[in-house]
Length: 295
Image 1 (spheres, rainbow, N blue to C red):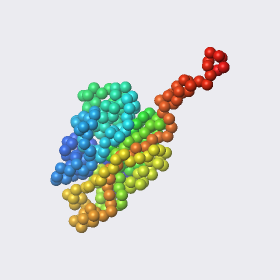
Image 2: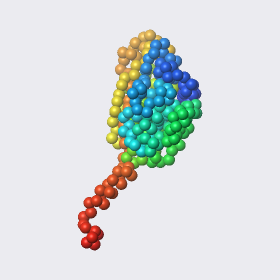
Image 3: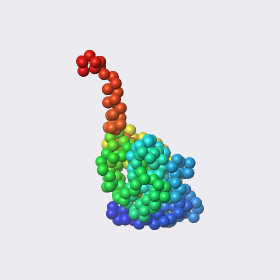
Image 4: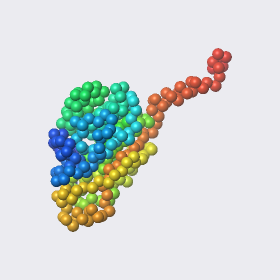
């Protein structure tokens, strides 16, 4: 397997090409990055078509969940989407925040940023912006976001703990995230684990489910919970590029599981909004009558 910077470059190059592919081609492969299966498999993606704010032109079929569906976004929230691609989850989030909210999409692939900006301009969305940058070093100040979402992206970053620490940094106290990602239970065969294409395809970069959840806890998050979990099956005609017939049989019948999970967690502390409400409560429950002068 390549080193951290080489892996990032592989992912950046693959996703620049993906930006020019159609949704059908992306949906037929692993996260759009591997050679498409010879059948139409929706290997990882979930269906957004019934989701409020969904824009078909912004959906490249690259996700593995519906994090915005679970993200508890409120009107006026500031939302950050990590690995924003062509803007799909940003536009769904914008539907939830309303015009009074703000959505920031971050992606390190310029082709994706350009595609997302064109989509936003066509839609006239002035409260959605896209910033080029690494999600393990976000171009965002501390304590900015009420909510962070991400869809099948953290598995593409070599240093996942660094990304999770960055999420903690940019969230306001009392803020939360909802993230869909790929995790493992058991070990992948070496041929899959060491292949750069499978890394870009969201499989080889996945870590153990228990380690993923531990990294969230280690970053300081609380109220950690799984909002959704589903099994991911890689078609044999993709596996045969890497494994023998016997190895494919052993892999499919073995103890290794590949899962899409949607994880929720909160940054401890109260938001300013909550503090304001509590202050108002104190002001309306004075212990004495001001007219008597006792206060």
